[in-house]
Image (cartoon, rainbow, N blue to C red; front, side, top):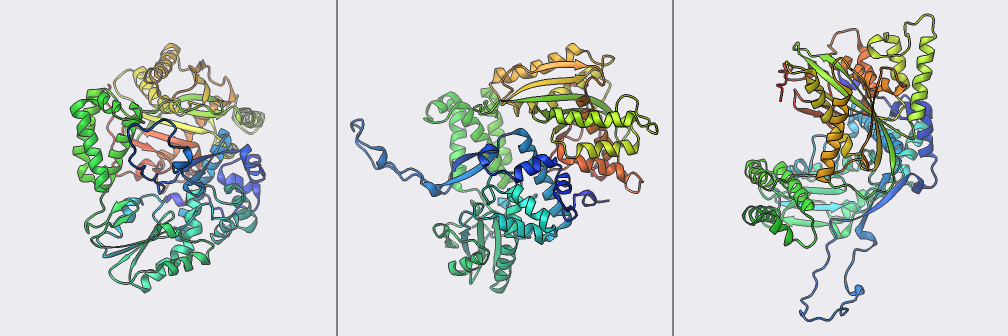
Amino acid sequence: MSLKNFAPDLRRPTDADSLARALGISTPIFLHVCDCTDPETLYRQHQIVKRSWRPPALPDLPSDLPIGAIRLGQISLPGEGDFRYVWEAVASQIKLAHKSAAVNIDRFIHAHAPSFIHENAYGYIKYRSTRANASRHKGAKIIVSADIKEFFPSISIGHVEHALRKTGMKKETASLLAKFLTINNSLPLGLNASPTIANLVANPIDIEFTNLAKRINCTYTRYADDLTFSGDNTLPSHDEINGILGKFGFRSNERKFRASKRGQKHYVTGLSVADPKQPHVPRGLKRKLRQELYYIQKYGLKNHVEKSDSESTQRIINRLDGTISYVTSVESQLTRKLRSAWTSICQTEKVGRSFEPRPLHILRDAYWFIDESEIPRPDGSTCLALCCVELSANTIQADEASLTSLIEKETSDAYQTAKSSLHWAESTLSQRERIVDTLMPRLFSTFVVLENLSDEPYKDTYIRALKLVIDPILRRSDDAIVEIMIEANPSKISQQSVTSSIKDSYLRLVELNERRPVEMPKIRVEKKGARPALLLPDIMLGALSTYAKFQPGSNSTLEYSFFEKLRTKYTIIIDTAEKKLYHRKNPFTPWHTRNNTKIQPSKAE
């Protein structure tokens, strides 16, 4: 059985209700976004200077130049066309709505409309990268590079609706989804689904350029708005490229059109492709990186920071760590040397990659609900599964009301078995189906850690798993006041151990000045069934457990679909035994699909 069997088919919905449900969004929130006439009530906009803009070098000036001799007007600043405008949802429920929609649109296209993922498109597609894009042109004799001018802003709501209808979506639902995905009638840079939709809109452009490349015997690729042609003889002219783009309502950026021959600087998506064996990071970047590492090793980090006029210590550390990751991802043969030097520096200086709290724009309230269960693995071992579900203050009342309504309906039904709650293990198959259907349109985030049980005390395994699940959520909540509610398990772990562990994690982030909630979270350990939302981690673990243990050929395909229907609610799943982190780009799959289902129990630390 393939995952595509349970990917949402967006060709089926006929109205706003069924479409919102397929996207994992409540209908009121979906329509609220669609009908918004003032984007500033839902989003904020950021200006980012484009990479292509470079400030001109200032002329040599005498050292005794008096103050005020240079006026601001004499200094070249980026103009209107030198910025990118990036949009960000303000409210957490709008952010979650866009994330859920993006995941389900991507799943729909991959499962039901794969022909719209063009083989020559490399941007924003899993397993494709700038390196893979550049590799297609390595060693070429001639390269022509072009750029689609204002790519995202040029994608209109009409472009989006037309592309969605081409996948088979119905007119009404394609129109609604186009409204949901656009701002001021164009595709915004920054929202989750925009890259996928941009590739969908650009698919006919890719087809046209691919056909052109075949006719003149050259290679064509596109990475977002960067178009590249390479070959040994004839390549498209600027007019030919502009002519094809113009057919679809786009145009090229004349300033970025470039042709180069072998022996000149041959670059594709920032990488040198002169070597016929593999792409390379520009020499200048590698030289600067080696120099910085050398000076830090010789003179110390403090001395290096003092010589930097504009960067703080942590910014330098983060930049170097990111640069090393980028360089080694392109040229893996440099990994051992660079990582060894960087690890030595970090250990000597007692530093590491981290992020300081961001400026607080809007304060939000967040509610975390934590529970655990035990899940048997195929190899006979058992893992402790610990789950944290995050709810927003804006939706928690409606979330709990929907659960309460379902519980009351099930417990009052004379033909059902529910007593006072709907815990997964005690629910029938039909009840589980109704639970999942109730949760599908709700907007929340789920974080799970799978930690193998061993001979060590249960308490130690629990605390280790708790720290693993709490730490990333604390770091992503620097704009929040957090309240945590944990279902008690007094026979295995004390309330004091749980609260102390969470407080220690928070205080450690304070000590390191890393991102964390604006104040120490309020922590409560409650009895089973204390409030409806405490059911959520139990349900999410139940759906995950059923899915993980699924075997092909069984009759439980309905239960298999429960996890798929809730997939967008799982933000991360950490499996410490497998040493794997599962997320949107690395989706969790049933255990039988793994190459190595034999998993050794983790050793106690």
